[in-house]
Image 1 (tube, rainbow over the protein chains, first blue to last red):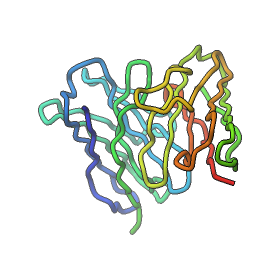
Image 2 (cartoon, chains in turn red, brown):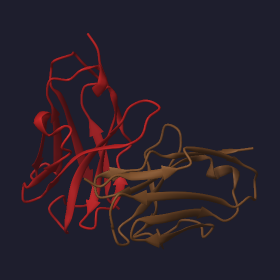
Image 3 (cartoon, rainbow over the protein chains, first blue to last red):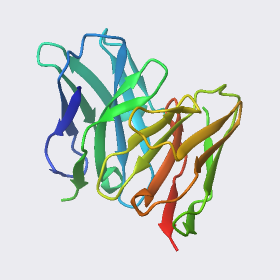
Length: 119
Length: 103
C-alpha cells in the first residue's frame, strides 16, 4: 500500500525558508487521480491544511499562507515538496504530508516531522 | 471559505459509554465530511469518510451521520484504546478537535 515519508531540516532560522520533501512509496505519484497535500500541527493545537498539488502541477494553497508557500512535484523521484518562506516561531509545528482524494479525503498520512523555527 | 465548528472540545466518559461529537459547517457541504482519530505522537487516521462510510478495518463501534451543515460522530461503546483527539474535516478545513478521555 502507499506510504508517505517526510524529510528535511528539523531546525530553521527565523526569516529563512523551510523546505520539506515527501517521498511516496508503494505506488506512483503519477498514477490515479489524487492530490498530494501538506498539513501542519503546532504543539498542542489543531490541524491546519497548507496546500495541495496535482500531478499536473496545479496547486491550491491556504489563503492565510498563500503568499509564503510553494508546493512542487518531482514525478521522476516520486516526491513532492513544500517551501515556506520568511518563517517565524509561529511556523514551528509538526508537518505532515498526505495523499488526498479528489473528494478531499486525506489518506494515508506520513508520520510527520517536527520543524522548529529558532535562532 | 468554509469553517468547521466542532464540539465539545473535550469530554470525559466511562468505558462502555456512548460518546457523541458534533461538527457544524458554515455552509452546505452535502455529505463531504470526514472524521479522523489522532493518538498522541501519531498522524491522524481516517475513520469515517463522506459523513457515514466506515473506512476498511475500522471497528463498527464508530459511526457517522449527517448532511448539509450538521454532522455527528459516535462511539457506541467507548473502549480504552479510543482515547484520542478526533477531528472533522471538509476540503481544507478542519474542526478544532475533540479530546476524548476516560473518566
